[in-house]
Structure formats: structure tokens, C-alpha cells
Image 1 (spheres, one colour):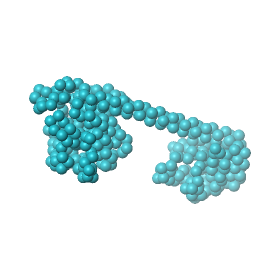
Image 2 (cartoon, rainbow, N blue to C red):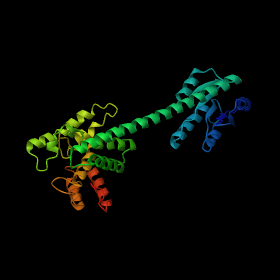
Image 3 (cartoon, one colour):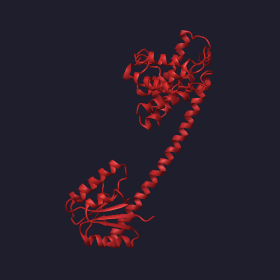
Length: 337
């Protein structure tokens, strides 16, 4: 692909010479006589490299670059690489230009070989940087995919421990992500909450199977064993350095908004938002799943329980979002099938 180079200078001789040298080197060249013309040009035309004179009437090179960078940010486009032309040996000017993000300076009048080599080397460098960035992104997504697979496998292992909660972790993760989305969380935080939801019950690995699968009412001693799973889970997940926030859902999903939950008795905003979201999703799935002692609770009763828990068991904001989700589920499909 032929690289597109734009030269901006109010000196017609510089434009003519630059055009000749760069075209002979194989670049597609556009010459403009002012910063204003450049700012109009970039709105409709892609640029691979910009050569910009510092001293020009009306808009000098520095002000032109400031306006260009502002336009790039507002329109979400990549920064155009800039080389400044200068006729002065001025350290202050170079400092200003570099602080604005210029990549290089070329003295006027320029030598043809110097101009060609600097433009070519910088374009090669930019291409290598972009290729490296693309490769890092590809590898990151590959690693994230592997991590998600490992987490999902672990979540399945947790659910398999409880004969009555098949798919519980996945559903809690799905509900949590949807609540976060509707609450306006970024996509990155939505995915973090999804992962936390998948592993919120990981601490149950340390609870005896006989307690987890008991069909009747738990004794006080047995319930105390169940209540250890948030701290156990947090201890397990804190060892995962790649996802330092992963433990949040595990530790605090049984906290209650009024402070009567466990393990730390946190109140209101003391409970991390992620855990407050997972608490709603977890309670909803518990009510809409089969248990040894009951079937799926009717949808109208589930709604009543969510409404009753607003401000006591649940953060009202997230409970109300869950209620809206329930209202939209007219066929009651959001439950264990």
C-alpha cells in the first residue's frame, strides 16, 4: 500500500521540493499552504504522515497540531504522526513540539536523502508498533478465552458438588452481567462481574458434601460450616494475581444491605458494588431453582420477595433492575429448566 504523506507549509518552494522528493521515493503526496486547509482536509482524507511547518501566518504549526489532536480525540481517530519543519535551531521550539506529540524535526532547507529516510524510518516504526499492538491484543484475547474456559470448568465443578444446583453459577453470572449492563457499567466491568459470578460459590469446595446435599433443615452447627464458604472462596481466589478483584464476589455476596449479612457484617455502600449485584442475582436464582425440599417458586412470589428485600437484604438500585428484568420475562423463562 502506498503511504499518504501531507506536507503543510506556506513556502511554495518548500512544498514543491518536498513534493518532488517524496513522490520520487514512492509516497502519495498532498501539499497544503495553511493549517486551516489541513484541518479541513483531515475530515475527509486519511493521512499516514504529516510534515508541518512551525512558522506560518494565522495558525502556526503548534496551534494547528493542538487543534488537530483535539479533533482526533473528539472523533475517536488515531493520532496522525507529525514531523515538524523548522528553519531555526531552537531548543524551546523542539521541546514544545515534542510535548505536543511530534515524532521528529527536520531542518529547512532539507537534504532530499534526510527527508526520505526520516519519513520512511518513522513510517516503518509506526507499522511495527501497530503490528505489535495487534499481536498483543490477539494474544490477550487468546489468554482471556483460556482463562474463561478454566473458570467455567471450575464453576461446573462447584455446581456438581451440589446435586440441586446444576447450572447455578452460570445463571448467577449471566444475571449479574445483565444487571451491571443495565446499571451502566463499562463492558470491562460487566465481564469482571460475570467472572466473579461464576466463582462466587467456589468456597463450597471446602464444605462437606453431606452438609451441602442435606435434604432436610440444617442444624446450627451445619449452617456455620456453610457460612465459611465466602471466606474460603476469597482465600482461594486472592491467589490469582492476573485477576486481583476476582475474590470480591466470593467474599461478600452474602452481605446484606442492612448490615445483617456475613462474613463481615458490612452495610450499604461498604459492600462492593459487584457483590451487591451478585447478591441479588444469587437470591433470584436460588428462588427460581429446584431444591430437595421444594420446586421453583412462582414468579409472583419471587417478585414479592425481591420487593420485600429492597433496602434490607438488597441494594435497592440493583434489586429494582432485577425486578424490571422479571417484569419483562412474561413467559418465566429465567429459571432452572
